[in-house]
Amino acid sequence: MDLLSTMNFLPSLSASSRVRRTLCVSTLAASAVLLSACGSSKPQPAPLETFTPSQGVTTVWSQRLASAEGPLTLAVSKDSVAWAGSDGHILSVDVQTGRERWRTQVDAQLSAAVGSDGRYAAVVTNDNELITFDQGKVLWRERQPGRVITAPLVAGERVFVQGVDRSVRAYDVLDGRWLWSYQRAGSEPLSLSSPGLLSAFRDTLVVGQGARFVGLDPLKGTPRFDFGVGTPRGTNEVERLADLVGPGARVDDEMCVRSFQLAVACVELNRGSLRWSRPQAGTKAVAADQVVVVGADGSDRLSAWRADNGDLRWRVDRFLHRRLSAPAVWGKLIAVGDNDGQLHVLAADDGRTVARVSLDGPLSAAPVVVDGLLLVATRPGTLYALRAN
Image (cartoon, rainbow, N blue to C red; front, side, top):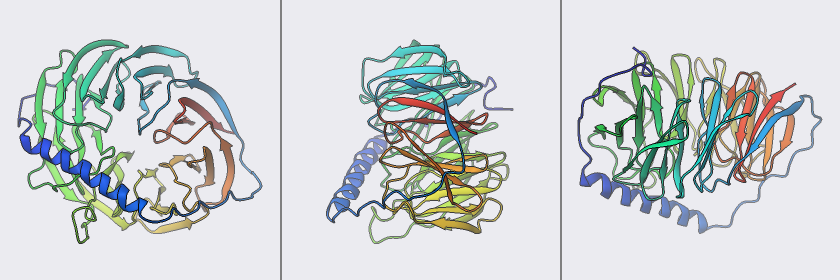
């Protein structure tokens, strides 16, 4: 049974006051990290390299929407892609042509957007209100018990929401009926104030709970498997933060994921077990295909590992402190943006730079590859569809 099929859900655990306290502490933890970063001089970004382009890249289409102030998500389903601006504008377009399918606007700032299965879509406002749409028309609204940054997951006529404290709630997409809640017992007292892991594999809901990779039964919200991708280390709770960072990189029956400031790991979803894990102190999501897994560390050293066993293929330090985005594996290429709005295109086999594209700003969401097109959304509000020639 696939998660996209119709299912009857049973209510489970309700949200507790502990969830709200955890959310408050997680916000303090994020502030502590920022304050510690401000205590030292900021390192200078590496200058742009000089190279001879050997790969053509063209813009197939572009669409402009409102600007994005925080991390958002490109929601790709079938032949459409939906994305949003922080001010509440939401747009769904055809992947191949960029033609508008539907457009709507929420009269509120968004903290988490957008999740969509092609027909239904969901966002969360800064006031913690979950809003669900059918082809751009509002179906229902539901107040959440705490702050939400991760884009909702819409699947099987259900909406799944993950709070900053990593609690997960499930709703019926048609009428907003609450179905169940889940939060792992004995979870870490602090959580990272950034998008977490919330995905689906067949009839299993995949979520991050601290540094643990958890598969839930979507009927009841009960765990099917639960394992760690690394052992957090540190002298205090902030240093031991190791939340799984979304989005995960799904490849067939496997998924590769970043554990914040700890490791990069790939897991077997059928068995619910860890395949391999490699230490890397990074903060952004990774990308993967059947051959390679790619991710940047906290200083923007970009590394590539063999997807089958985790052996290092190459590592480059040409982009130090350029504040790289999450990367994308684009056929035989790797694409990654930086904070100056440059999209760097590298050869997947050895990491050499083969092209560079100037965008109108830094990326606001992890880039996505669909039918050979690279979709990249920028903070000024432009969505580009690029093709490698």
